[in-house]
Amino acid sequence: MGLRTAAVAASMALFASAAFLPTGAARAQQSQTHPIPQSIRLDHEEAIRQLTAVAHRKGRTGEIARKALEVFKAHIRREEEYILPPLTLAPAIAEGRVNPDMRWAIAMADRIKADREIIFAEHTTITAWMNQLAEAARRAHQEDVVDLAKSLVADSLNDTEVMEPAAIVIGEYLRAKLPPAQ
Amino acid sequence: MSRIVLALAVAIAGGALVSIPARAQDAQAGQQVFRQQCAICHDVAPNKNRIGPSLFGIVGRKAGSEAGFTYSDPNKNSGIVWDTGTLDKYLADPRAAIPGTKMTYAGVKNEQQRKDLIAYLATLH
Image (tube, rainbow over the protein chains, first blue to last red):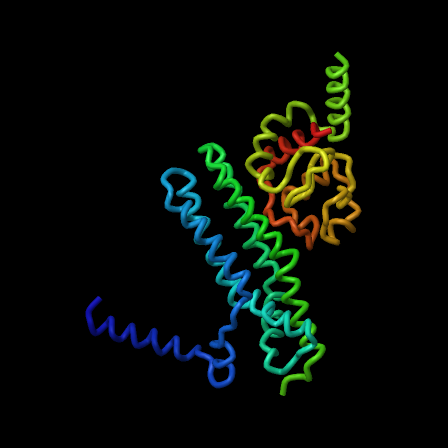
């Protein structure tokens, strides 16, 4: 590809992406990021640290861990984008404090509901990788990796049983308590 | 001697419950499938619940009835009794068989592996 052709292609790509950018309030809403509970952040960092350490090992366990790490990180990104942020509101709501600035959590809860089966499928993919990782680790007598695989599958159950429903409950509670958006 | 008689009786009872032709299944191969696909969450010792419920005595048991395990409502309310047919359907695609199940597992897609696994589960009495 010549320089001019490349420049034209780049301009078209820029134009195309600009055409799909949300504007005004919608852009502000989408670009706004919300934190997640610190305790969960620590859990995520630790899980990624441990899985990364296994991914650096030679042999079958390292090979599987490298692939599993990609899937796991993608799931963590989804969780941190819109599944876990509503949980930061739980302490305030538990104290009876609700205000219109919390409305963003309603949209996130709606997105969790809409994506429920996609999210569940991600958990099943993680389980499949952890099954493979645990089996390879057993064969290699790496009990620490077996334990890690078990704990990551347990995390999936925790997400399914507690985190995702709790985030939805927070969204629904806010919808019931706050006046409709103008 | 009495242990051998008991083991034989259990094996015969298990075989009668699942009613799969003997040559079409292989409990030993099923044990391998269990180790690779299920053992990360399930134990086979009685009353030992982990991420999933103990699978001891699963064949013939009502779904959602293992004491000391917190099941999802869809599982508890499914009305399913685990036998060859219901296990085969569930293990092929858990979320399709019981929508809302919290078992984060896509299923055993290979039919022979499912048969072998069910044959192994039938020995857990």
